[in-house]
Length: 390
Image (tube, rainbow, N blue to C red; front, side, top):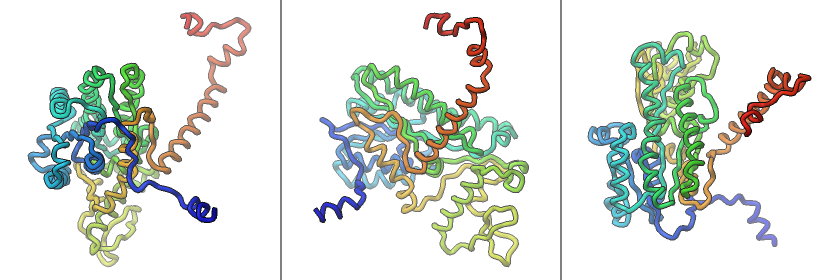
């Protein structure tokens, strides 16, 4: 009894993701195979005995741009593991091109016979206030590009996979978004709106495909997970939205600080940080007035700037661990959750948002003219639903 009591006091946490039992290995299709989350997930499921089809943007892969070097290292590990080598297929995929989506799904079916789990994770954050995105034709174009990448790329691959899943009457679509699909964030207006759009699409689609035994799950990771593991693009800041003028906690300031911290982890011999009069962090020493631009300074450039966060291996592993665990555990479940919020902080933030929304709805009822008229009028009032017979 004493021994059992002592053991029960210790929290039990799984040391590795829980894989639901299945009769046969599953075939995973990862839309962005070169992202840190996709690489870690591929390692997990390949080791479990599943199959993986990983999409990569052909032009980026050929030019060794973006995160393709990490993916090349992963491929070297795959070559050394005969079991993995037979279960991985790499396909060219730019989700913005409908034809490439159709070809990639066809190649997956030709290689492994089916697609069991489709992970849509194409994402790119555009950092800048809404007004800052209206400064030039280039920044205006970024708004459309954001939706092409975050919304239409995922829609295109889903539409390409649905006929295969519907014919087999089996499949599971997982859409990796973020709590930004619930919470608006100043300085990430276009990113948040694209996340809300794809979640609304998936929520509606879930009802349409349920009769075909195709499941839909939305996995919401913390904001930092998606932004720091994918490409981020920053637009030139306007003076009116600098921290000294605007006290709103803009995303630019948040991620500038995070990039500087990551830069110091990679370069521990760099100058110590000093708080500048504007409230931003610089890496100048106290006795100098000029300094080399830090990583965070790039987000305040006078031109449109794209970059990937310099994530050290240990930081990267820690950052994505919970999300990879959730994706691995959810994939293949007979009755998967429709929505999964990763991380205690994310759950708390969304709960607070929903509580606020509920209170706002109560206030709306109190001041709604329509409700007051229907409630107080001596003349019977028919609702729209009554009129149309709903």
